[in-house]
Length: 96
Image: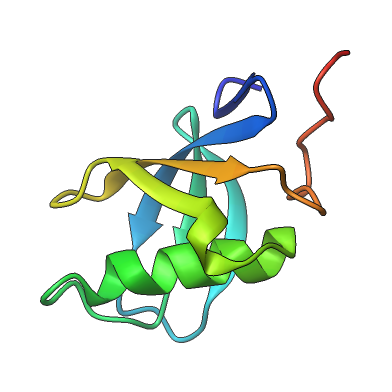
């Protein structure tokens, strides 16, 4: 899959974000990215904060282990999740 990669123990995800959705959910692959819908509006960074919190919950890690690495002001985002305990569907563990 082209929407994720590993850098050591950090999972890097290319995300296409759809704010102001009816609920928070992962849709699946869309145009080479992982599409995620969030209820939060794209105002004052609310959607970004909601995305990081949502992915921390999905991956069962503290919020401090999820970082927005690119795309702060657009729908296409790059996030890093340090040492995820649980992987999103479609992600395979890194080779050791």
